[in-house]
Image (cartoon, rainbow, N blue to C red; front, top):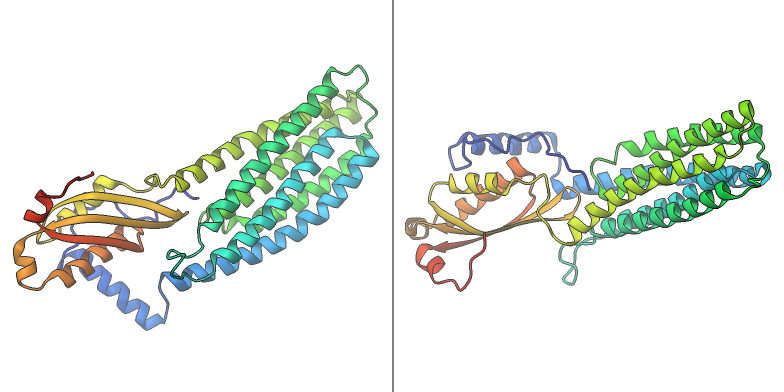
Length: 343
């Protein structure tokens, strides 16, 4: 959903084992959390979801109001670009409502049937948003081309068109600032943010078309502005759809460096090898990791598997933002007779 690292040095070669700088840093972080009373990932995610719901609710109210204004304005002005922008806002309103529902569903706790919870609902919300955007772009393109090839494009009232577009510009800017805070942490919120950004750019295109009509009388500028709006919609929709497909196909997130993860694991005292490494995302920023870790026989004999698992898990959390990791510890002789090994 965002394709960013969280400021961690994935190329750090200081190691993560007991007594290392990493282990000391983890201990300091845990002590700090205890002193401040701050909770771990689950509470933080819940708080973020609540903030996103508030942002979405406010944005929905603004977009719905401006949608009515633009629809009425498009009817009285005869402006296709204003109608296109209103249609775009309608798709955005539907998308924002879907996004709001997705954040509510995603906040539901995990259970035996849905062991990872419902966070992927955000991804399905983003999928619906991207498809809506593509449909709107296709419709607007068809209507704009039809008007451009027509010998009578129709009368467009530039003055009213300009006034309505200015109202839309201000409202979209306010909505954009409200949604901006959640756009980097959730693919669902990113979809909502991109939709409102498209509305903002659409309002600018309508304003420019209205100015051209008022100053030159060239009414086909309205249809040209509609094509520009459609052209702005498609790349954003495709980008969002690509991110959704990446999550649903369980591809390795672009923010994850698998080789760097291997290096960190192999630096753990007692680790001999690592294979069957898999990392994927439940939703944007929520990574899951699993691997088979071959360890020295002495680790099992001394009963040090527990501390090793703790160190591996904290390493993944500290350096790669992986909150959910699963390690299968195995002796070398077991690894040699496994039927199939992966990377």
